[in-house]
Picture 1 (cartoon, helix red, strand yellow):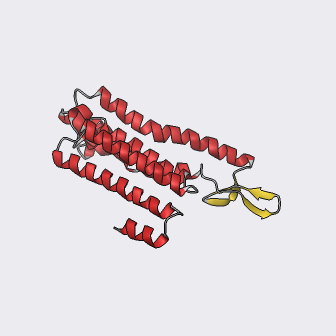
Picture 2: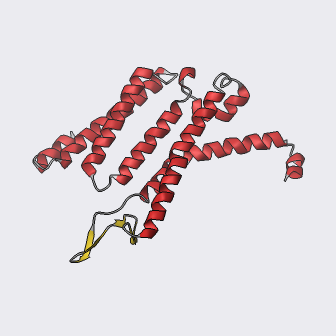
Picture 3: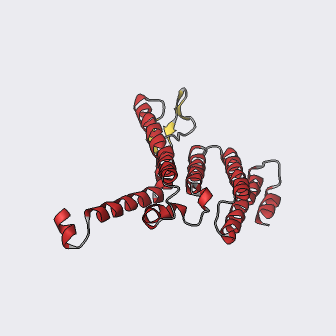
Length: 216
């Protein structure tokens, strides 16, 4: 209540400012979880046959829901709507908010509002946290929706890690050299690990040799 805020010495503008900052931080913290939960609604099993000629696909996280029945169509439409709203909407909202204030990001009031998104990045790459959010979205989407296709899921991870590494090397978004090097090392590690994981998926290779190579 406004009178309570006044008694605490907090103005309405200050309360509004704190509320906006809190909402923004929560949105970006729960972003990967939101995407993962939405993506699970789009994931169905392969056909499961309970009797000859009686084969159906079921929702992976809830086999009581059949993917070939009309109720699931409503769930799928809702999932696409929320995926667009949250998966694309949150990074887009952050990007346009930062772009609108890009010439004032160094000012104390603007930095207090958006600093958690821009801290560590060069001024010309103020939007890079949005790029990282899109990468998280694509990675979560690949992990969830390609759960029945492990080899394709690994390839997708390799492509994402490689593209992200090349962009990081080319555009150098980090303000400090140590952060840039750490990001390069982490992305390179992910790419190498996923490439080695392909050894486990190669049926033509000896299993023991594959495990040894991947461990090395």
